[in-house]
Length: 195
Ligand SMILES: C[S@@+](CC[C@H](N)C(=O)[O-])C[C@H]1O[C@@H](n2cnc3c(N)ncnc32)[C@H](O)[C@@H]1O
Image 1: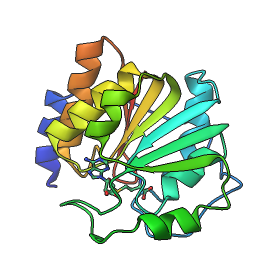
Image 2: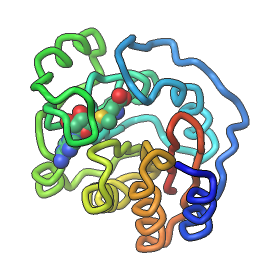
Image 3: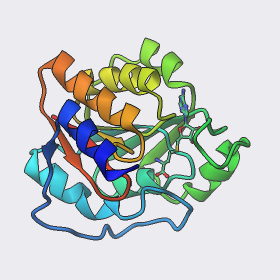
């Protein structure tokens, strides 16, 4: 995006800049294609900074499992929810549920669910320590899934705040609607954090 557009976007939807105190590499990683690469280095910093407990994590948007494996380093249990067929913004569109399940099978604390977030949020009343939203990057879906995730977690992160202005707007609006604080880390396509 042009610098001027980004300037006005940040003015319109101001988020608090997130500056990690420390970066670290998780022990367990998986080598698959992902736009998430690089963000693994700030997850532990976020957990420490916001005092997040390390029992449960839920992720919406698993794809090939890069971020799910990162979370598996820090949480006793990680649930990954995805339709596993891709969406209008992903390069890969075919059904990759079985393939992803197989490649994540060694990570025993990750459980995958082939489900649309819309069906998932109708039946889950659980509370999680941490949530991650990285589904199709439209406003409506990010807002709907993200609002549920923020209400059902202590700390919720959103990928692609920089590459998709609709995601940044949704993060801003969810924080306003819930009275929470919204931060933004502008690298690796952008990570919004609501606490
Ligand atoms: C950008 S990818 C996720 C990338 C992943 N977090 C990583 O670490 O590489 C987006 C994923 O969201 C999934 N998705 C899109 N719309 C969805 C929906 N309505 N419900 C659940 N998953 C959805 C797609 O199937 C796709 O696998």
